[in-house]
Amino acid sequence: MVGVGVEVGFRRLCSTSMGTSCETLLRELQCIWTEIGESDEDQDSMLLEIERECMNVYRRKVDEASNAKAQLHRTVAAKEAELATLMASLGDHTLYSQIEKKGSSLKEQLASVTPILEDMRVKKEERIKEFADIRAQIKKITAEITGCANQNNVSFIHTDDQDLSLRKLNEYQAQLRILQKDKSDRLQKVLEYINEVHSLCSVLGLDFAKTVGEVHPSLHETDSIQSTNISNNTLDGLSLIITKLKTEKKLRVQKLQGTVESLLELWKLMDSTEEERRRFEKVLCILRMKDEDITYSGLLSLDTIKQTEAEVERLTKLKASRMKELVFKRRSELEEICKRSHIEPDTSTAPEKTNAMIDSGLVDSSELLANIEAQIEKAKEECISRKEIMDRINKWLMACEEESWLEDYNQDQNRYSGGRGVHLNLKRAEKARVMIMKIPAMVDNLIGKTFAWEDERNMPFLYDGVRLVSILEEYKLTRQQKEEEKKRYRDQKKLQNLLLAEKEAMYGSKASPRRSNSFNRKPSYNGNGNGFMTPAPRRLSAGGATPELLTPRSYSGRQNAFSKEIRRFSTAPLNFVALPKEDNMSSFASVSGSEPESPFS
Image (cartoon, rainbow, N blue to C red):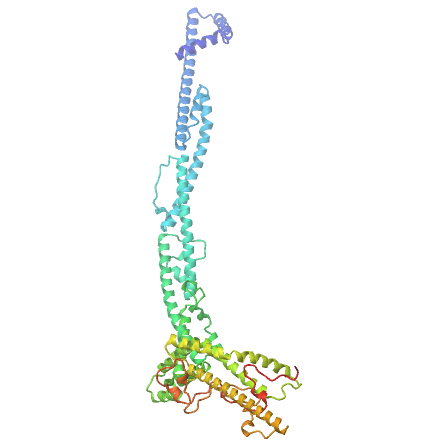
């Protein structure tokens, strides 16, 4: 069919474009042959040869055209196949339908496929680079997580290299993001562990680089050649190191706390100077801090612990040589505490007894010192329990002092004379009268508080070895006797005045007879002569009422303290029955506030 088409075309070509030239050439050739004298047979023979040569030329051209067509078919088919493979590999099938719809000639098909194929080739190269980059990152991060030194040995899921689709690329990207997050979390955890190890090493005085270097060298190296190792082995190693360091820290804290407590006790016993204490001021904070709050550098180092232990050992040796002095010093402290609260100190640790026991070696000095320490603590506790009553006793004593002062003040004949400080004495006298009026209620309230204290503790409240209730009851009795004596004296004075008035009415006014010596006694002063007196409980005379008989709640049996002379109640001896007797009526003014009329009124 192709040959027929060519022949028809050739004939048309001969008949049209080449018809004129071929006919002209044939006629010119016939003319030449005629002139030459070629026969008709020769001419026909040469014409047949010419036709045969023309057919050969046409046949050769047809073969060449056929070969060219076949080559174009193969080229187009190959490119279409390659394009289809690329589109399948890249997962892009949108261009195939567009290629089918374009021109039907082979050259047009080739022209339409070639640029698309070139674009797909470029796209494939770019996609391969993306896949290679992601795979390299996955390999690297996987190697860091697994801790493999040679990344090429890392095994992970290999996929078909022909699958370069976006779906597969997204899978690799998702896998990479997961690994990157895991790496970030691990790196953060490693940094937290390293910081904690650094803090613990700083407190314990250990070499940080050596400690973490045992886990992995990259944990302390500062160069950028080797990245920080984040493998499971590294995390487990750091966790184990932290556990060991915390255990060691706890042990050292307990050890140092015990040493510091001993050091404080020795400081207190030895009265160490501030300079000696200042050297160990840093370690004292360990007693008031929790384990997790101890972050001071070197606080728990072996050097610090050894220095503290050495100081304790030194003071312990010094303590042994000064034990007698410490015992006497603690005994003095005990006596001072008891003196402030008017408590009788324990006689078992009296200085003369302790001195004899220490010299004889019958008792250990440390045990004796511990016994005195226990007595000091007991005395302090008793002082706290007696505080309220002691405060009331001090107020009562102050009121008694004011009462004594007021008595002396009332006996002063010149108390109203003009002079410096008179107005101050008048103000003090007014305040003293108000305070003295409260004494009976003050004493009763004090007795009630004392009874409550005794009932609560089932023991008597002793004041310098004497039961306080007995002293207060004696004071009440003495005060009552004093008031009765004043009353009797006032009645006697009134009777004398009546007899004197009757004599004056019968015989006229005469000079006053000499007063009886019994009324001519001078007031008794007790003190330094400046008008201030301190009342003290009076010991009743023999055969008089005993304190036990006058106490509402007296204890069964007489105590040893009552068989002795009642001890002094304050610094100055007290005398509640010292009654000054003066013929002047002003000297017998009532303690509760009665006073002769002021000449200034």
